[in-house]
Structures are given as structure tokens and as C-alpha cells.
Length: 160
Image (cartoon, rainbow, N blue to C red):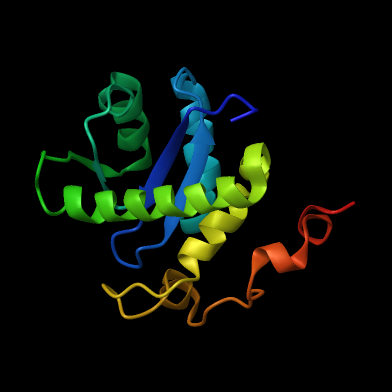
């Protein structure tokens, strides 16, 4: 992106299928990832009881394990081709890629400014696996949203 993001951290709640999509840089240090985790996950949902994590070197580090241990979170490493890790995460990532492609087509290089709307749209859309939208599973109802974001206009979304 124009802001230097080259990676998206995808965090999915196993129960509600709600997702957090956080743009980041591949070179972001662990302390920054820890702050992002506290802000994006713990602040919104509390401390997870358990995490299934892919084997990204950042998340198997002593720092990450120590943080999860201090928070009291059980951390399990995902196994390649295991249904608990692969299919659910891969489906979410495929959906995110499709949504980002559409966003890039509609908004060009400014797609990252609309990234929160991508996450909102994902969480407000019906998921067959839970027979509801993640927002409905989390809050008991879907959130109100315009029919088409491009019809609302960037000034109304981002302000003058």
C-alpha cells in the first residue's frame, strides 16, 4: 500500500467467525505486534482462553509465548492440513483477498483508507457455517449498513 503495509494479520474467532483484519508491515517488531494484539483483540473481546496459531516465526517466538503465558492464554500451534487451522483460516483469507481486489478496483491506491469497511462488511455478512453474520452471533443483530459503500461517498465515510 502507499502507507507501506505489505501484510495483513488475520485473526478469526472460532465460535462467531468474526474477523479482525489488521494491515501491518512484515518488519514490524514484536512489541508493536503485542500492542496491536492488545488493541485489536483484547480491547474488543477480552483475553482469549486459547489460540490456534499458524507457525509464523513471529508467533512461535519466546516473546509471543511469554505474552500469552502472562495473559493466561493456552497457545496451540496449528498443524499443516489440519481442518481446525487450514480450511477455516484459508476460507477467510480467500474472502478477504476477493474483497480487497474489489476495493482496489473501486478505490485504487486509496484502498487502505477503506480497509475498516472491508472488515465491517465481512463481519456483517452471512456465514453459512454459523447460519448468521458474525455481528449477529456477537451482538444479537446485524449492524445497519448502506447498500453500497460507493454510493455513500468518501467524504461521508472519511469526513471532509
